[in-house]
Amino acid sequence: MVGTIVYQLTRNLSEEEIKKAGMDAYFVDHTTGIYPASAAGVPFNAFAIASKGDPITDLHESLAAEQKARTTYDNILRFCDDPDVIDPIRFLREREVVHYQRFGENLRLLTDRLNSKNFYAFNPSFDKACFKKNKKK
Image (cartoon, rainbow, N blue to C red; front, side, top):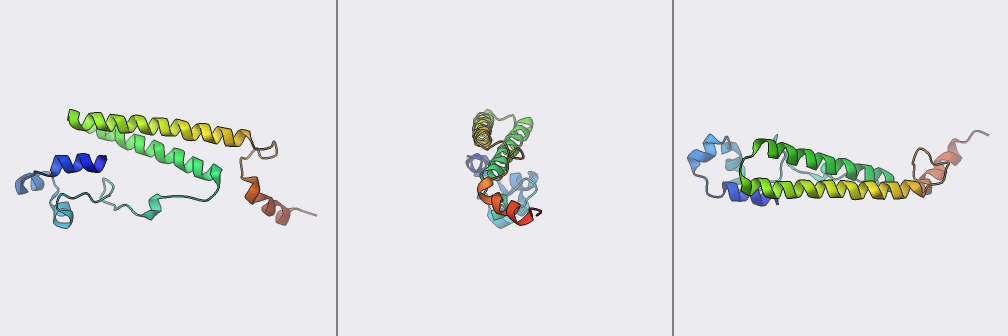
């Protein structure tokens, strides 16, 4: 959705408007096409997708991702005065809040099911072997 908003805002820009907006370097590489990158110009890559295969770790990562997205939308709203941009960004922000709540509920359900020895919230299906190797005799 953000890519669509950017496209709608830039598709009819003149060369002068592109230069005035400081988008000339971007335009040289991408015209006004959508190229996923951070505000600092760092392109999207697979490093943005973090997965460890442990449900507790992955849920914490998902919670953090939702909060980072919400913060980005908050920052966009601080600088924007166009209602055609504000409304969909508010929708996306609300969606991030709901996702955060659902991931939090899942984390609580998962940790509620751990036995009392798992008070550090580790995944017993993976970590049992670690304790056997490190147990003092």
